[in-house]
Length: 123
Image 1 (cartoon, one colour):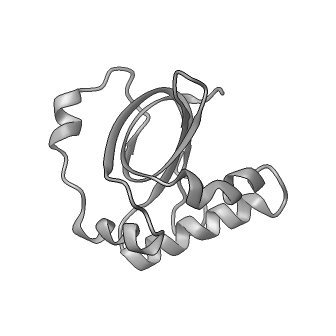
Image 2 (cartoon, rainbow, N blue to C red):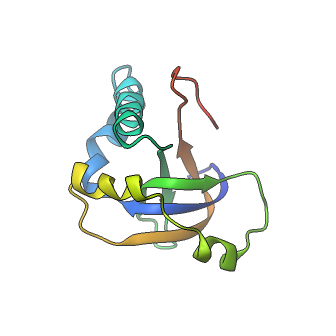
Image 3 (cartoon, rainbow, N blue to C red):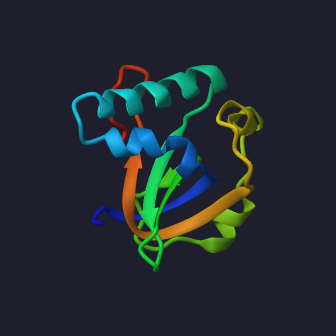
């Protein structure tokens, strides 16, 4: 899969965003993904990121995250477990019709999608 190691906290949305990630390598797909992220940030008033990773069985997972860290090479599990989810981020479950609970993950490799308000990548 490629990518780099990261820690993230968010909700799995594989089914909801499958079309966006399928199209991301097409001329119309990348702008659609960016537009969705910027729209979520605008509505929630908090940074929002997408994280894509593969599990050990080769299945792809996509999370909409309130926190991602790709700067470190070693992560503190206790620190990630103690982090609080911004209250406004909880609304993402209703907006995207998410059923599952919050996940806190460490991924050995994956991809992060995150854009500032001007549309430039944060990663």
